[in-house]
Image (cartoon, rainbow, N blue to C red; front, side):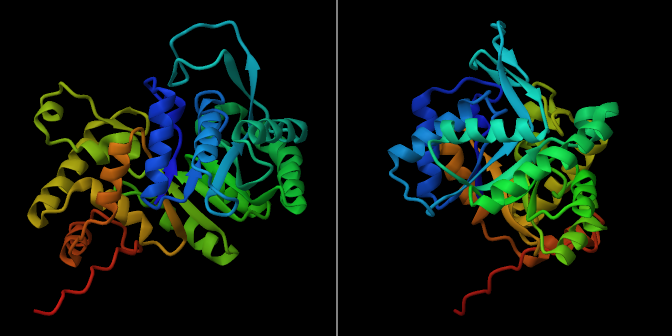
Length: 337
């Protein structure tokens, strides 16, 4: 399991520096030695906090895998809005899309300064795809393939980057990129979870053919697979539930309710199944959880190590809740009496 550093960039709510540093330290102590961040997360705040936390923890080179992203430049702004693009109490900087060669090189250099390092293990091109760019997507994709991709390839060849790929919310754009270029892997957010496994059909098999690994971000699909829908506050409507960054539609709520009912039959917490399910696929090398406190780190670590009986996964498959091509975690052997 990897540590997603968007929350320590003040995602939706402000965190103190002390809490951010304590959260990173707790993640390292729990064995989460992969940290993913981005300039977009808090407009530099997440990267800066990761850099300070790693320096304070005296982490030696090679002990932790670090990834960050390119595709946006941070430019000065006069706004003082308390919440912008989902981030609270951030520096007076505005993210502006730029997938050009020069834009990627500049973004990368600024990230190194914030992270206090001279190289990173993985560099992702951030948020390409129609979901983000709409009608501008073809032009943005062309800008990236003709400019930013060349910059990333040069950074890899120089040794400043260990691996390159896309960090996206759509498996379709990752598949398109893999058909146009040579990428080591992808950070796919929310598109291979207990709620959706469409990536099984063509994208994950193509990754297997091309030797590309996949890191699965957003295993809780924006929260609904962590909170569930049957708790009193949620069921009554007092606590909203989110799916794919928006209020969950009724069809998703109904599907999650089914998952919870089966979980109750086998005493399996929904969040534990949500974390463990994607990790069973051979192309997925890490599951990335966004965490905002040491307590959340401890809870996620517990869920990831919760024993889940094979019968639970069989029940999900029998009731048509997971793709027939989706591997499921192997249950641990029953100890002899």
